[in-house]
Image 1 (cartoon, rainbow, N blue to C red):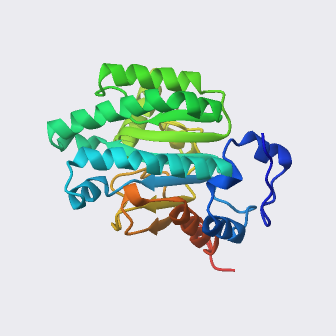
Image 2 (image 1 turned 135 degrees about the vertical axis):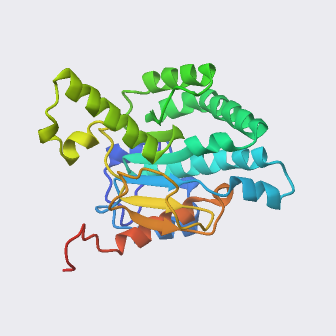
Length: 273
C-alpha cells in the first residue's frame, strides 16, 4: 500500500491508506481542483440524476442501451472520487417508476445491464469497503435482480468507506405514498398516535430513514427539474446542473460541482449572515 499526501487535503495517513484509489488515478488538473476544496466542508451526501445516456447514444448513432453501458464508467468515476474524498453517501437515480413506460426492449436490456454490472462489480466494491444500498420498490423488478440486490446489500452491509445508493424502481411520490401506508397501518394497529405525527416520524417511515438528506443534487444533461427524485429529502439541497451528458461526466465535473457548492450560503429558510 502506498501513501500519498496532497497539499490542502487534511487527511491522516490511515484514512488515505484505507482507500485503494492511488494518487496516480488523478490527473494534474484534477489534483489542482482537489486542492481548491475545503475538505472540512465537503457535502456529506451527493445525489445525482444521471441524465443523457439515450441522447449520448443517439449522437453516436448507436442504440440507446449503448448510452446506458457507457454511463457505467461514469458511475465508477463518481464513486471512486466520492470514496477517496471521504463523502459518506452517493445516491444515483438509476431507474424511475416512470421508466417502465419506455419501450419494452430498452427496459429489458436495462434490467439485464443493471444485474450484470452488479455481479461484475461487487467483488471490487466490497474490497474497497463500499456499502451498496437499494432505494425503491423491490416488487416489480425481475426476480433475479431482486435476488442480486438482496445478495449484494447483505454482503456489503458492514462496509463503511462509502454508502453507494442505487435508486431503482424509485419515485419520490411512491416513497411518500408507501410511508403514508406504513404510518396508517401503525395508527390502525394502535402503535402510532396520529396526533404525534411530525416530520421526524414521517422521515423515519421513508425507504432509508438512516440516510441523511442530500447536501448537493447534481443533474447532468442540461435539464432543470428534479423529476420526482427524493422529493422529501431534497427540500434544502443545493442544485447543480450541467449540460454534460452522463456518459461524459468525469472527476473534474464532480469537483466543479463540489467547489460551487462550497461557495454557496445555506440558509435553510433563515437570513443571510
